[in-house]
Each structure stands twice: as C-alpha cells, then as structure tokens.
Image (cartoon, rainbow, N blue to C red; front, side):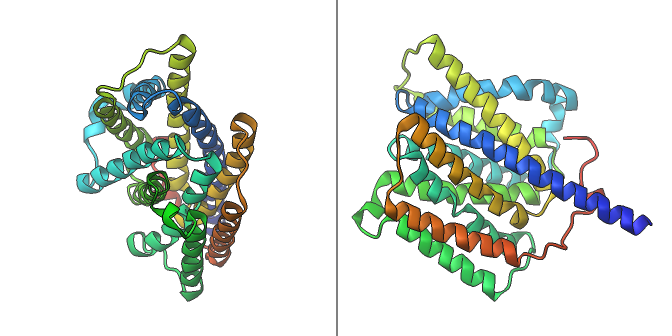
Amino acid sequence: MTTKTGVANAGNLIMNGVLLMLLGDLLFALNDAMGKWLVASFAVGQVLVIRSIGAFIVLGPMILRQGPMALFRVEQKGLQFIRVFMATCDVALFYAAVAYLPLADVMTFYMAGPIYIAALSHFFLGEKIGWRRWLAVLIGFAGVVIALRPSMAMLSLPSLFGLAGSLAFALSLVMSRYLRSTSDTTLVTWQTIAALITGIVLSVGHWQSATLIDWSGMLLLGIVASCAHLLITRSLKLAPASLLAPLQYTLLLWAIVLGYLFFNDIPDAQIIIGAAIIVVAGLFIFHRKNLKETVPVEAVPPDGH
C-alpha cells in the first residue's frame, strides 16, 4: 500500500508540474506579446528596468516570507551565477530580436529549446536518451536552419539574437532543474536583480519619457513575467525537464494567435516548415521518453517555494 501511495503521489506531482508549465507558457506568451509592443517604442534597457521593478511587486512579499538572508544561502554558487547569466541573456536577446522580427518567427527559434534541453539533459541531468532521440535532435536542428532561411539572412543580427536567446533559455531551464533544491523565490529574485542591473546599463543614454499607460504596461510586464517564471521554475521541480520541454510548443501556437491579433503578423511558408520540423522532432523525443521516470516525493522542497 505504501508503494502504491508513493507512486500515486509521484504521479500527482508530475501532473501538477505539467499543469504549471502549461499555465506558465500562457503567461510567457502574453509577456512576449506585451514585450514586443513595448520595445517598438522604448529601448530594451528601459523596458528591462521597469519590468524588473514590476516583478518585485510579486516577489517582495515572497522574499519577506522566506527571509531576505535566505537569498544568500544558496547551493553551488557558481552554477547559480551561470543560471542567472543565462536567464538574463535569454530576456535581453528575446526583446532585441522581437523588436525587429515577427513574434512567431522569434518563437520558432525558441521552439528549438526542447531540442537543446533533450541534449543538455543527457549531459547535465543524467536523463539518458537513445540513438533515436539523438537523431531527432539533429532533425530538430535542421528545422532551425530552415527557419533561419539558408542565406545571408541567417547572419542578420535579429535572427542571431533569437537563436542565441533560445540557447540561453534552454540552459537556464536545465540549470533550474539541476538546482531544484533552491527555493523558487530565490531563483527568480536573483535573475530579476540581474535583469534590473542589465537594464540600467543598457538604458544609459536611451531613457525616454512615457505615458501613464506605457509605465503601467512595463510594470504589468514584470508582474506577468515573474508569475510565469515562478510557475515554470516550480514545474521543473515536480517533473523531469525532458518531459516538460515539449509543452513549450504551446508557446508557438500562442505566438501565432497573438501575433496575428495584435500585430497582423502572418508567418511565411519557410517559418511554418521549419517550425513543423522542430515540433515533430520535439514530439518524437517526448514520445521516446521513459514516462515511468518519476520524482520522489522527498525530492520536492516542503516549504512550498
């Protein structure tokens, strides 16, 4: 009976992780659309500063709850720094790319994230993958190349920003999974502080006046983004990264819908073909995943963070 209860609890944890990831992806899609709207009128640095201040509206009470000193009591400080650096690069590069490219185009580059995660999880998380999934990883990379358009356009800065940002995004998710004993509050707070510092540096000489609606939009961007980060960070503690990774494909659907509704962007044939190859490869990786892998109940922090 004890064994059955443990299996059931582990299954519930994984299902909760899946639901949190789906909700987090929806919030990230809203965050992406709002970010595209804002960086069309304001410098990336300014958006990052106000966005980070908005994030502390959510994080502030959580920091007080766990105690400010808990932010400094973290495991493996070197890996924590790498994760924060990658998360900051992800945000800055995404906004830099989406300022010039349609939302669906940038999200297509980010859809390669699950492909990268499958490969990285093999080396960093011990989540073994076989030759079939390695083949799917290579096919997924081919989809990225097609989406990049095999021409001189591949070397355009916005495209490179999107590609580099997707790599940083994948690395930050893998690090979040590896550092899952660190509280969600601590993980998200440090990456928010890093984004704030980066924004201050980038905004020097580029600060603009804004309307009340603009300031409110930037603050709301921070609230939405911090909630999305908290949900996804928590989901990665409840379920394997390689199991959750394919759920990121819902972001592409949301990007196409929101891009069309708010910016009248329609993805061209090459983006659709590249995205389709990436999605098929990612879903195959998901299909081959050993679904019997579970997260022991004792591996989930009991503090609710």
